Image 1 (cartoon, rainbow, N blue to C red):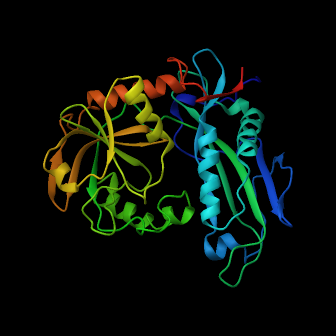
Image 2 (image 1 turned 135 degrees about the horizontal axis):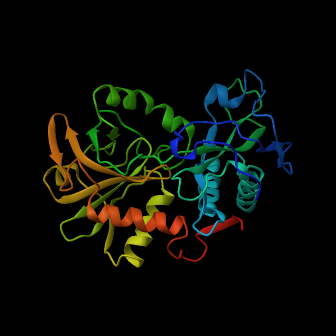
Length: 345
């Protein structure tokens, strides 16, 4: 492990920094090449590339950490490999092999180990694998050639000074069609959420909660995170839908709740009327960036519901879930087998 970069780690934001190396592999003539690490962060391609004309792109997000005992690790990269494989197939892209995905993540982090923030700073190394249609496409059809890349960037803690509850609104927009692309991690899903999130921010809300597009009565997810709820019996309730992204953080929290905290966990359809009627005492959003963002208040077209933790602090159950999963990620709590991939000892 080399010397660290001279960075004020504790004051990093969630921003892009050009680091030393990135991984690139090309799919041409029906096969992926062997891939390599390069220094150049710029991409040159045709103005008619598939990604520019028809948004043929998928991506992933995960993090590398320095653990309490000084190892550099990442969290369940095999699940990111699997999800990207599924996403690529759905957009008629040649999937990048799952074992090579994990090896490429390890290689890229090792090549940038000077950028991995030290333990205790709250900062992490964000890893962004992505893949897109590279060759020219003028008719509506899949590209023939593809580029797979991974870059990394150091990022600060999502919440500076602890996880403060946020205010969210029920959106008038739909995030995904019932049999559309909501269950894959495609760039186009995030493009269509941009107008809704800017509008929400302009009106004083941190996020949008999207309802099921068919009936607009059930909770789905937000623009970039799955939803978790805790009922009066301390049961963790996870909204179920075929058009939400299968969040790795959510699946991990499900396991942690059952096996570490002894909680009952139920995955089911959740009606907005249940939430606004006070059936749940805690609510949070979960994803790679923040792990859990507690929700303090939901606004449904002017009608408001405030959860029992209020706007001052994270609720006790969400707090326990957050502390346990981050403890596992940082090496303070023993992890289930296979969850932690050691990159450097």
